[in-house]
Length: 234
Image (cartoon, rainbow, N blue to C red; front, side, top):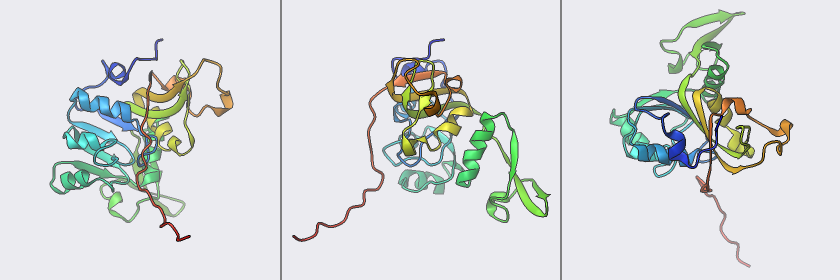
């Protein structure tokens, strides 16, 4: 089975369509599938739902799809740093489903494991719990959360081999692993494709069975918020 594609547009060909749900890895600007997001923008696909920890910034990450009004709904845990996101939400132009961060990660993991729902204490007694089933276990109240089953997963890894085994680098591992598992089709963009058998099996974070297509490309190393101290006088 051919898994390596020439570029992001080729990898999305025959997979991307209007109205689909996409699970996207990344945390802030760390480990986001920027090449695939750019290709989705160029495709013109509309009415997309994204399950992602956040929406990037105005001109990077999912933010570029918000600018072109291609996103209908966001399922997220954090939506700061993006003025266009705020504007569209407050104007009623964008649907938003807030999830506690751990709940969102578990919803993706559950979907990847074929689990349709699970109970959690997180959110009990808050607006998060409104409209959801409540159940008591050992005297404690839990709410039912549904697993996320996405039409497409897009992730960014450090290394891959031609079978799709992935290694993520440090913090870039974040939401990429659970997002990758919950998509019917998973496309991974990577910094380097290495020969089969060259990666230590114990170092592989995501088995290739979850990955259907791979692209290699150059990635921008952005810093979301740069904090420096003033230069001290000599």
